[in-house]
Amino acid sequence: RNIQKGQIKVEKTPSAEKGEDGVYFLFQTKKYSAICSDDKKFLRRLNVFDLPYVTPAVLIVILMTKKKITRETAIEMLLKISPYISDDEYSICKMFIETRG
Image (tube, rainbow, N blue to C red; front, top):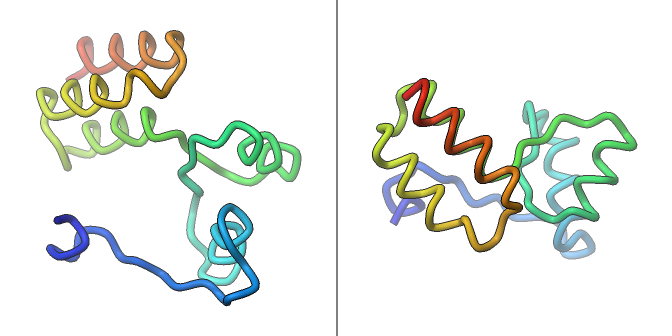
């Protein structure tokens, strides 16, 4: 739905670059400001190379603080991804949303 609305743009990578390598390739060639991923191994690699990244939970918080989504939507989205993120990340993001939203 977000792709159809033009809110998310799908980028094609060269056939040799797949998965996280494709994401890294696009980041380098398109000059994006950060990478969003929940893959811990990939995030460690980005950290080693001091590359900027955000996790999906943090992205939800950012979208709320920039008023792209409401506080209620942020809480709903965070709850939906809660089974896939650490309890610490969930708690921190939820507390931020509730106190600043």
